[in-house]
Length: 332
Image 1 (cartoon, rainbow, N blue to C red):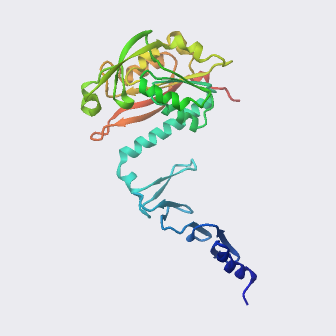
Image 2: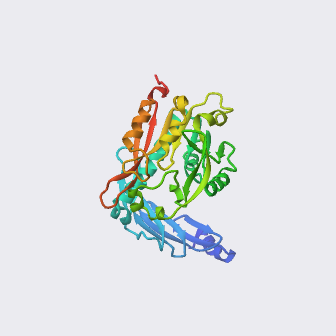
Image 3: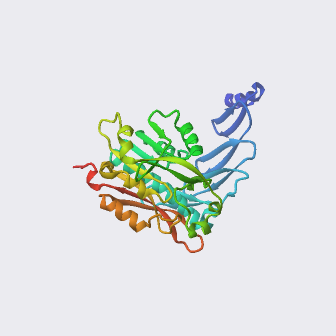
């Protein structure tokens, strides 16, 4: 004898509803489009739209990857890697495992961002100076990672500043300035047309060999201010400022830092792009930059490769994160 449950399921299509029977006493009713039930393993099922666009592959114990057809990662190409005792796992497809350098750099970028966010929290940072902001990538990443304090961004080039301004327009605690920072208040020219690599310095011979973008350039006149001359306004309204300095100025970071003068001591931490292989004429090597920061009381908390030579594996530049260890909150 047909049960009431079964009769009810048969009635649903007449009402314009679709029914996917999942087993005794269980069904999914949907208003539009069919559904497909795919078994993932004992006690686990996947329900997807009946359009043939999804593929499922195992990714370790009790884990599966669902991808749309047409992606470059075919079903079955995933490998789940345990990240020590962190509780995290890394999912790799065959493309990632085939390109070690790209994987390492992507992982370094992720880890650097996570580390900086953790340091901002640990040291109670409430104002980040984002020097060399470009179009706001760094600030937007901080927001995604949960930083809610003030961000003060400096970008000297007109095109990038216009995009930066637009990115920050709905964030009341993200202030932007159409300025470059340096050792002295002046007006100078910057090389443009190099995307995120615009610089006040000309490219080195090595830089020209590495990047085709350096073959052609245009210049733009920009205003440069000392960092210690803009800090008062930037920190206005913060009762107990705890600032952090991020610099990404394509070979010009030490000039920015020099412009902080004695107020460099106000910063609890910094992030600077330091070079093992110089892309710009006159830019400092990593050893010089790190020594300068250390003389001011900063200590390294993390080093993350930004670029590497494909042929040799050598690191070209690192993101160097440093803090004043004595400024860390004391816990009992």
